[in-house]
Image (tube, rainbow, N blue to C red; front, side, top):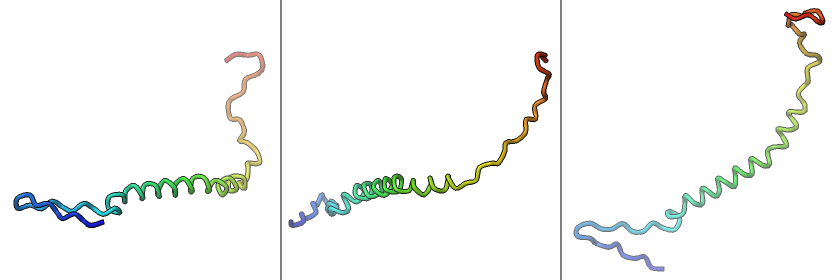
Length: 75
């Protein structure tokens, strides 16, 4: 396809239309970014789940430090 000559307006010249890549670059990069984000978000979950299961659990809980009252009495 032949390029159209720039249109002359008085002493000013209208810029040539951008090439196809220049006009659609933002759309291509958006789709690529969404695809990479989806891939990382869905395929990275298996490594997180394995690391959570390997963490040691506490052997006991902390003792209760609240003051105790005898049964049947109200403070």
